[in-house]
Length: 225
Image 1 (spheres, rainbow, N blue to C red):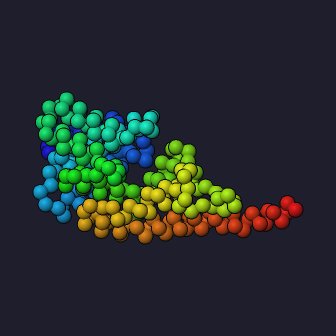
Image 2: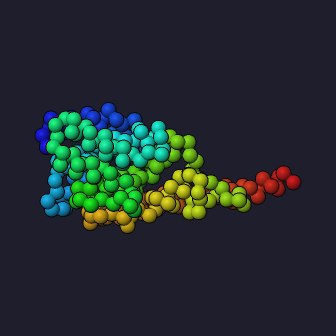
Image 3: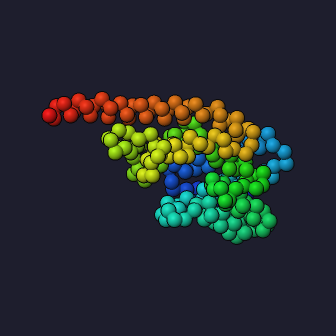
């Protein structure tokens, strides 16, 4: 890919990015993660990979405005139409479309090509470790969701059985379980290196959130007798 083509794709991506949790820096990290992973694989189509990484989240705005939409589906169509509109071959546009369609974790829509698997892994790496925690907290703030929920007895829920969205619920249902879901050996290795950071943060935050409820509520009850 030449610099002119890269700039064309990059500028289109930049025009679509408005979500601070899925901003241009997220896109660049995904791209750089993907290039790191690709060095350990054979027969990677770098043109498809770079284009897919740059454009993988261009449907985020539409999903944010209408949560019923899937940003991967919207973004893949936007990318396909953009590529065809700027003279790219249909076969190339279709490969990029397929990569973007499957970069979001869904059991019924898994990545098939090597480039799609690398994009999937590179995107999930940015949800692992400290970066994943930070991005999740930013997003929860954007959509005004709490850090945690309370159980019927007034204690802090760890998120494991929650249906109401919160950071703890996000951690238990998504962040905690992603480390076994990578396709490439390099991504699995990088994810494992980050895993303990996320675990330590969650455990510390849960403890710090729980203790005031455990100790303070009984003290308050004494004073209110």
